[in-house]
Length: 123
Image (tube, rainbow, N blue to C red; front, side):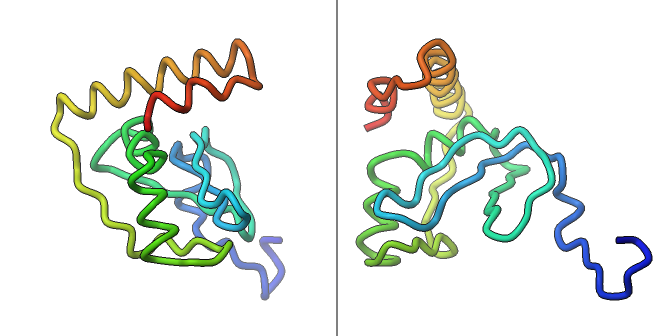
């Protein structure tokens, strides 16, 4: 691909960075999850932050309030546009609390991948 004149490596500076990947299409969209880095392709939507940790951002984006904003005010269909999603940055203490809860959820889901009860902790 390096010698093909039409080859493009869009977003290559973000390859292998840890962030939040999300599905923006479907009845349950948007859905968010931790991304542990890799090369992404079309519709490989990811969010990266240098301001707060991936875990704290995941906690914010997965909240019932954010899902309500995304579904009710930004897009009413099955394809979520997240460009205008308002996010209030948490304090340091709030970030730590979010990271702790997300860590517990991730641990619970590693033990039981079908576990959905842990997700309700964020509601």
